[in-house]
Amino acid sequence: MSIATGLGYDVHQLVEGRPLIIGGVQIPHTHGLLGHSDADVLTHAIIDALLGAAALGDIGEHFPDTDERYRDADSLKLLRSAVAMLNERGCSIEHVDATVILEQPKLLPHRPQIHARLLEALGVAEGQLNLKATRGEGMGFIGRLEGAAALAIATITRPDSPAATG
Ligand code: MG
Image (cartoon, rainbow, N blue to C red; front, side):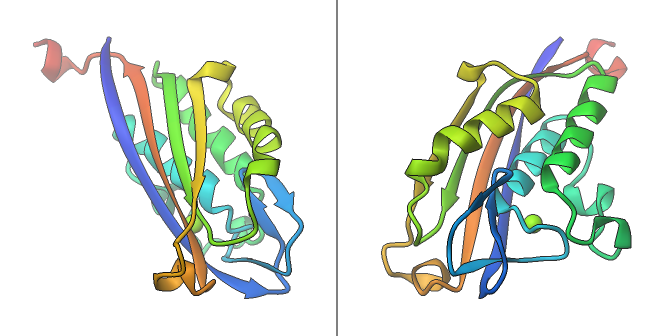
């Protein structure tokens, strides 16, 4: 087995009248994230980090936003599919760390619930997932309340490839 890491980044526009869904949890707010799916920016970043660690490409390849099946899709379901892809290949998730960058509302009160939902979808133990939140400090598109971003890094163990063991 070898250790691999993957990086995930996502961004979505914030608009009025959309639900704000972060890590599978709907957060009460006047604005929500715009996207083909539920636009769950945190879950999308985590999916890309996992796919990256497993060398499986990216979220757009596996769940294209041109596919009607993924309209308003529950991103936690997409995350479960990505985790299943890793498991099928003998990969094991060791750790996921993620940061959401959102000006408002504050995510801290919702963090325990988000953490619990993502733990369940990832199938990992409590100490294997860390979630953080920060703001745009009034600067840039995040500071102007135009959008939100998320970053994630996943660490996995995976079977050695024939080339690596050869
Ligand atoms: Mg996205």
